[in-house]
Amino acid sequence: MPEGHIIHRIARDHQRWFAGQKLRVSSPQGRFSEEASKLSGKELCQVSAHGKHLFYHWTRGVTTHVHLGLYGKFRVHQNPAPEPRGEVRVRMVGRTRSFDLNGPNCCELIDQKHYESLRTRLGEDPLRPDACAIKVWDRFTRSRAAIGSLLLNQSVIAGIGNVYRAELLFLIGIHPELPANQLNRCKFDELWETITKLLKIGVKHNRIIAAGLDKNDRPRSRSTPSERLNVYKRDKCPECDCRIISWPLGGRKIYACCQCQKK
Image 1: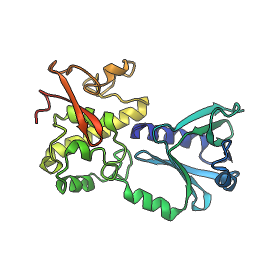
Image 2 (image 1 turned 90 degrees about the horizontal axis):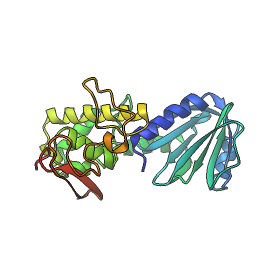
Image 3 (image 1 turned 90 degrees about the vertical axis):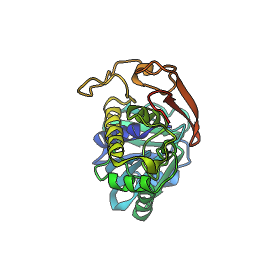
Image 4 (image 1 turned 60 degrees about the vertical axis):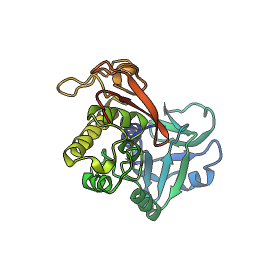
């Protein structure tokens, strides 16, 4: 499932390519036909993201909510767009570009009340300017759950997935099973700063990069996938050469260094 940096990257690109235009909207697959007919010809005002959720804001307070899930995918085309490929749920056509959305977990038309309710249920998103780290700290202090589990809880921090949680905990030297309420404030501030930095790097380069950062935090963007990560699906720790261990935690497999992240 795409992590938060990908969703914010899509929102940024779609905002630049389609916002401020009256779009032609259709549903080649047919499952979004009624909603598409209501949107076609309307102006798209803004595209925003919160965690793993995308929002297309139209005139008169109407919003299209998209969650890609495991199989959702966007294809962007230069106009004129080619024939739809596969089961295209939504096609939106702008002045110079178009995009197709295939296989989303959720694609629905919602009103302002529903939008605000959904945002309320989501946790703080480090990539949003309105993110409040204090609210996350408060959740940590009241939870005895393993920090590795809590990081996957989208109602606490929105946008972090399995890869980011493993890399984040390694970089700050925390064992994934440490109870969240045992994390001190200094370490929490380091955690928040680190995940914000990693997510911003992810948006810029459209990929997760947690290893190979120089002193100025400039990533080796041309490195191979394995070189961009420290512990996720790795065998040896890049710092101490000790074995990377893995086990189920929070419904997903966590990876950690048995030496650098002592329990």
